[in-house]
Length: 431
Ligand code: CMC
Image (cartoon, rainbow, N blue to C red; front, side, top):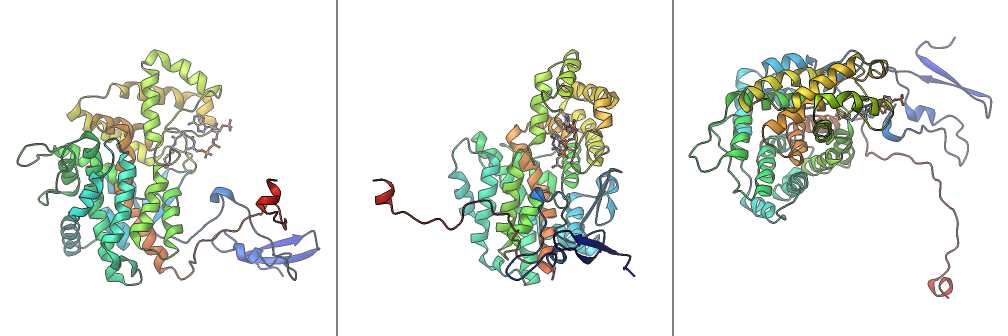
């Protein structure tokens, strides 16, 4: 009798049948390799560009149910964390797998706070960039440079060394991000203020001028902290996959995180909120919305900030961000584009085109409005994503390093090129 948790495969090329075990709703690609394998020929492989139906790892960090609109970090619903926790506590949770005790929390916050400074040479390195350098490019290069300041980071099997680099990275990201922002404005870099909380200190490094001490608005600091929590992890997305793939070579965590920043820099990943803002500005006023929606339905363009590969329901992060908008606009004044965004959402959610395709607002639909109200130029938006995502990348990197099943990432290919050509020397080819 056939085992119940198996897949029976009949290879019609040979008539042979194979029984493949099913575990956790997956079959192992290597088990398929026995199919059709004959002397000198490879067995069956799977072809999956973009990994749309391939699990690359087991992970206990983040759970998403896209149909139900659920996002949990280490089992805790994102809504509860955003309302009641802080970004640094969430970072601890992601890295350590459980919430900290009071003592652990104090130690963690202390350690992160006291690693916010960077080596002066790194400051000179950043100052060497052109005046109009993209802040993501500056962030990426300076994180990469950090690995040269901490050569011991290459000892990735040593838990203490690993922990120290994790603290350093989470601590220094706001410093490097803020300095890349100040650089573009020709303003002096502001050193960290260890009396302030993580989001307050970030605001201080971004906006402090000649005052003795920067006095951040607690509502803005809270809103920023909530945005950080929402962006901390999102399971095996493009940048996390980049971190894991590069990390599988056993390189140091600075180099792996640099790969994550590079992936996030791309417009299909971290850049959508910028596109939303441009779209809202182009629509300009509410009266133009119906014509815009018609254009979307005719396939002229996309409604940016809508739709998601995984969420086929309201992105839970979008609901929380919508609420955070109110808090920020209380301080900054309402962003006039909010009215257009809300009306766009209302119309789209009643329209069969969007309803039938399960297209709902995603995390990027409202976040750009907040960032703009906080006076960030669009180039900074992805930096604001990279800073909190660092804790998620590192949690996933730690999982990878300790996972006995993981190997160096090395996909197969289906070769489509020529074979066995005969090289003709230049003198003959060009004669
Ligand atoms: N506006 C209009 N139509 C859309 C949109 C949209 N934003 N998104 C999807 N569709 C349509 C698409 O044309 C297709 O229609 P049809 O079946 O008639 O061909 C259908 O909905 C299914 O779309 P898909 O392209 O197969 O979906 P996907 O999972 O490959 O793409 C997506 C997901 C996020 C790339 C896409 O929804 C999109 O381009 N959205 C706009 C960009 C955006 O907001 N990106 C931010 C994503 S959230 C950030 C993150 O977590 O990284």
